[in-house]
Length: 58
Image (cartoon, rainbow, N blue to C red; front, side):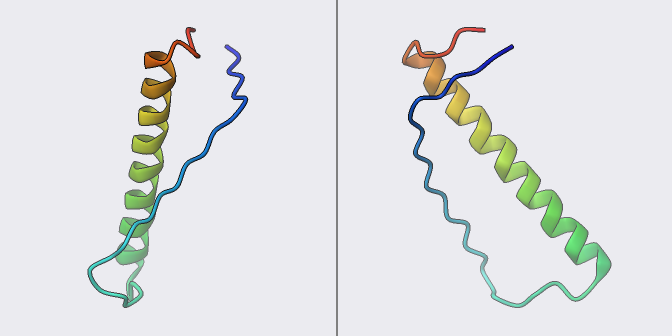
């Protein structure tokens, strides 16, 4: 499968309720898992938009 993206502009901003760093290994692992979920969500929405506009058809 090949995806050609000629122009793609994504602006995302995730703001936490508190600005304190995670102090435990579990906190760091949870933060990484949260970030991975956001990346997956954004990627899905980009692909959905490309499909809607007829720019991507696998």
